Image 1 (spheres, rainbow, N blue to C red):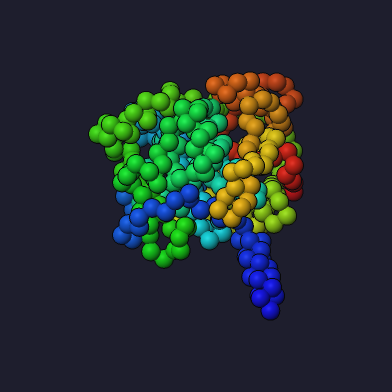
Image 2: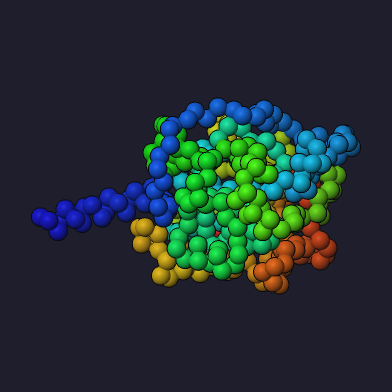
Length: 371
């Protein structure tokens, strides 16, 4: 009977895993803070609306160096760009402030489920951002590539060792007593941890520890050339792109011509930003195909192997823009280099229209299908 009971426990746990995907908990548990509300601290983003045509695009005083979208002033671009780890577990959805990010990276973690790394520089966030989770190995590549400051909550022992060896600055919510993290009511741990990005921004210049980290970030290096009136080369007409990283983890994008944007879907369901229930959207989605390996000897608390993506080298990819798919190539010869992108057909540099960018880091073994 004892053996039968143990077997049932294992089967139930395995079933929950396939229903919800794996959740990687931080390596330590922080002392809970009072449960705040997620009230707005900045003006909410405008509702999703059609993008004006190139001929009617008005001149603006300043544009974001990361994606070409209008921003408050040129001084905004002089801030330190923050790379925030945001959870994508089903129990953590919907996330907050994904539509306030300039660029969002998505990459596999344990079990080839995925996690977001959102870059915040040019747009204000609204209330709390998150749920915030732990950093992963690929954070080193994103820091070295774009020169952004990673913000998260913990990391594995192996990842922390690699961060230190690379000299990566990291605002780690588990250590250091950083004051911007809060657990909120209404969600179960570990899916209830959020960060106040506006408070982080306001602390530069008044918190020496933070300023020391910022000094190690380097000068911002935008990954793409942006032209608000660019016309991408002709490609395949695509209404929907679906990415599947394992047998049960499926996500993607659907083109909506009425708003000139790609709309996010997870497991076939539309995704919204919890700030205002607007669809999570992107103007450009770029898929980078990379080799990936399982890391042995550094498992998550459940014993699952972590993932290491090889983002130095070269490979192929696809740009999804304006309802089309265009084959591209990427190259990053050294870790200190920025990733360069070219059109596969012409070899010319990739130029993106102004608008939010989603950068999908996808193993070559994963499935990418177009409809």
